[in-house]
Image (cartoon, rainbow over all chains, first blue to last red; front, side, top):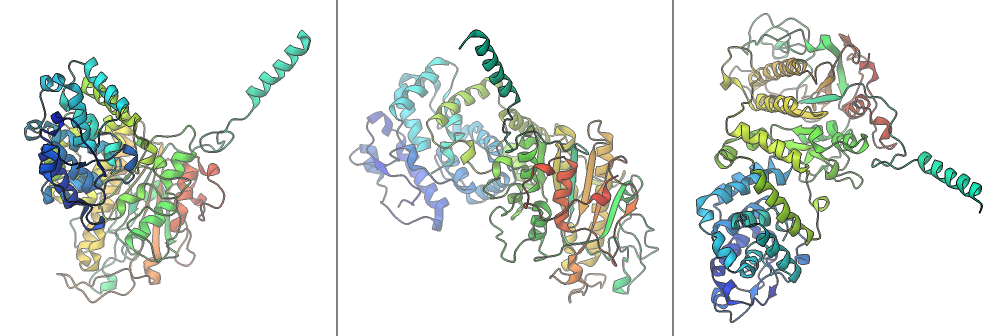
Length: 191
Length: 441
């Protein structure tokens, strides 16, 4: 079941994208359900993982960033960031404690950067990231999968080119640098 | 048009351009002419709900029928300590009482509205009394002192110049800016609650981190900038305070140094007193000093709240007031040790409200009766203390008495605005209180 702040639907092309998305979207969906809770509208559609894996149906994604109009709460922000990076839901007690740490600071970006940095530096989360070589072997696929992983939508044509060129221009840029930018972006604050 | 005509006309136009007023971000045509009296104000909500009987009244245990009168706040007030029956370990002040270095208003009033802690904080920080139905879950209706300061100071000041530091979470984080349509988060203050910002969870998750390497930071900014460029919401749409990149990194650096043990918070304790004596009030004051020392902000508001144990523990209430009193003297002593802040800072102390005249039915381990705060007249009676350099603040002065009260809670915001020179720029009608000019030299 998807909560109301889960995305709309659009077709996902490309077999390369499917690998790994099974767990990504399951984790994100579970996180959405766990965090959004009773404040969200009920059910839009059951998420059928096999449909996603075999590309025989559609998966829930936003059609565009413009559909994201609501700010994530402290718990939603941290919970989705954890799920997107670790590919598993965050424990409720950890989530609550971290939400209080974030609440204890006026500049949410300031403390959010530090919490996210902790996630990014955790070997468990890093194990879910592709290597630099794998990233550069198929940059278009990497950019698309990163958009899906963090923004739950496909990149626009200009976005695709812009991000790809930035990666190409900097041989030392690793997937962790890209992931860091996505989870620190303004769009990531919204659903 | 001949050449002479052209030169005359273009010269006149150029002169007009030079002379034409331009509109400042504050909405004024020219910068304010009102001079600042000082460049730094520290506003302490000496809070938790304190009765005048135990503070400026110096009645100690008289009202309990259990002991002598006496001054339990020797760091702030003049007066002899109780002659006996001490409920606290007396901490020797670090210098003369603060009252001798400023002006005491012993009979101020919290004149209207519920005498709740959040109501009291809101009144003290917005300069407006609150209605009965105050919503605890959203930012206040009227602008906070931080927003007035940042919007109406020219040139505009960053959030780094204004801080709100509280002992508790609950509704208090929302007091760093209002929901007023003409003000709001873009003029808000930095906020910190040290118990969580630097507490166990923060140490577990953030300890060991370092600020990003410059190359990583550059990559982050480049990529983030690109991603943000494709999203239609910018920093102005995102609720909360946003520091500049440099300010954010400076604050992160301080937090990480504290979490990693590279720097420590100095506890506001007398020499030789073990660190376990520090309570949440002390940690709050310690972080306040660290931030004052590091960033020298122009406006800081902090609170102490431990005295609220008075609901069921009068003895604890006495002990917490004594500790908070020492912390005020300690903080003032530290401020005077800083080359930037010394002789250029005014500190204002004000309880958010008082407590009832009549006790409730609860007694503590010493058999002493406890007090609530339920809007009787006694819970509206508070004091104010304004301390500052001799050329700015009247020294060793007392203004008002129980027979002739002077000053209200709502007067502190305009007083701060006058001290920092932005009062003339605040639109007429925004602040119902008055400047406590009696405190000025």
